[in-house]
Amino acid sequence: MNEDKQVNSPNTDVAKECQTFSIGELAKAFDVTPRSIRFYEEQGLLSPQRSGQTRIYSKKDKVRLKLILRGKRLGFSLAETRTLFNLYDSHQNSKIQLQAMLEMTAQKRAILTQQLEDINVLMTELDDVELRCKDELELLKRG
Amino acid sequence: MNEDKQVNSPNTDVAKECQTFSIGELAKAFDVTPRSIRFYEEQGLLSPQRSGQTRIYSKKDKVRLKLILRGKRLGFSLAETRTLFNLYDSHQNSKIQLQAMLEMTAQKRAILTQQLEDINVLMTELDDVELRCKDELELLKRG
DNA sequence: CCTTACCTTTACGTTCACGTAAACTTAATA
DNA sequence: TATTAAGTTTACGTGAACGTAAAGGTAAGG
Image 1 (cartoon, chains in turn orange, yellow, blue, brown):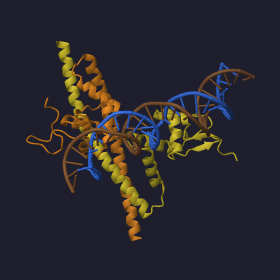
Image 2: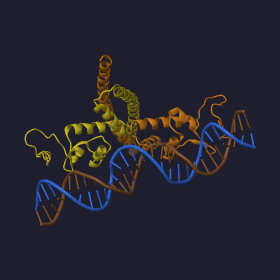
Image 3: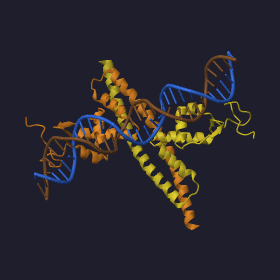
Image 4: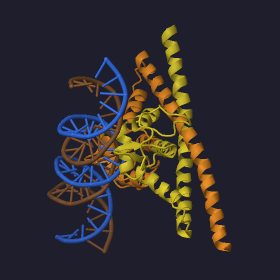
């Protein structure tokens, strides 16, 4: 029964590498609060190991968190991300599952395409605004 | 005092063009609810003319709404968009205003760049997932 | 031994962006 | 004239994504 009592102190590993992370480490690494990470777990997006009460995050968990945050940046709700995770995880690969997955990817692709267009438009507008601002500033300098 | 009683009925214009819109028309045009449009006004993002109680939206208002919605798609809060509007509108063009504007554009540009990267990564991942799904479906067909 | 630094759960509070219901006015139409 | 169909204000409700105490456990260091 001498399991699950490894790596109690972070960065105090013996031979291999630091494969696990505390909630605080992950929080710092991705600049989020521990509260958020616990909330993602509560919403079924993460399920880290436990050492007693304490959460222990693997590299896979870390990747998951990264995916969650990228999804957030792109306007995905946590529920959507969870659905994607579930579809991806369930390796039942029934026809229905696969088609649901394809539908979801198609839908997401459409949104992303729209966002690309939005970004391009906004970027050139920002170019415009910036130029005009800089011109004005020059005028203020010389005037 | 025979002003502000033009265009009571939509699409019943005489000569020029339909330059104004009712809240319902705008709502349909952009697929949002009238409630949302009123809310944007409440937050200081729109200020349409009035004909009595009724709101009358100009082409400029329409453009504004378009900008608001694009901002939303890119993750801008209404408060951020309002700030941008205010900066853009105030043609005082003081040094401070201009620099605030430049800071804002720089910050937004950074976020957009990050989003572009996120989108590219996700797109290729979607490609991957889609390919695998389709392969699996083929196997199901032939198996 | 005590403090400090993390970790935990429980639970209520908060912000944003509206939704929704109530009660009303005005305008066009049957 | 009565009835839709649009608009209006006021005001309370809601879901998502956390924030923020409160109250406590644990382990290292002075």
